[in-house]
Image (cartoon, rainbow, N blue to C red; front, side, top):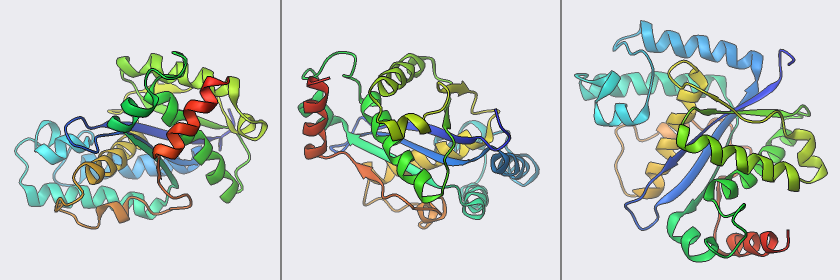
Length: 248
């Protein structure tokens, strides 16, 4: 593996209790050497600046539990803002894709072969397409390796989706697909904590669009490089996906 092999740190976020409940996947992309500097800065911000935390989870910050147990909301907000500023300063391009649970259930589920019938296969296929567009923008021509948070219930689904994508990838996409996805602990891998912040806040905006967040400009801060528009898979896209899968 070369020093500057391109790496995407990805996370998923799921909501189940609203009309637009999404399956969502988001990732940040940078060369490996850039991630080293980012990780050092993120770790320093977490453990050496008040309030001190060992690692960041967006859900704990929101609920003031776990690492944020006993932290006053104004200090929580300051910590989140400090971490978001790091993302803003390092400017990692991000890619994001989502589909509502209701749309997937009504349009896709049960209409395609079982090996494709998984929302995470759907998201993976479109995330890799967005990755290809982003890489062209940045003149990145090396394969991209994806790293996910280690979640036992997700690993088999992600690996199956990867195998299916490799089998059906276009020549251009094949050149950009790196090694099989890796799964790491987000307690130890700093860019995964940043991906968690991105995915959680994106999902929150979709699920509760009228919600007044404590840091109103946070999503602008953590999406510094918007080279590709966020992708919502609508009815047309889902019908096209169904038709393609039926002929594979």
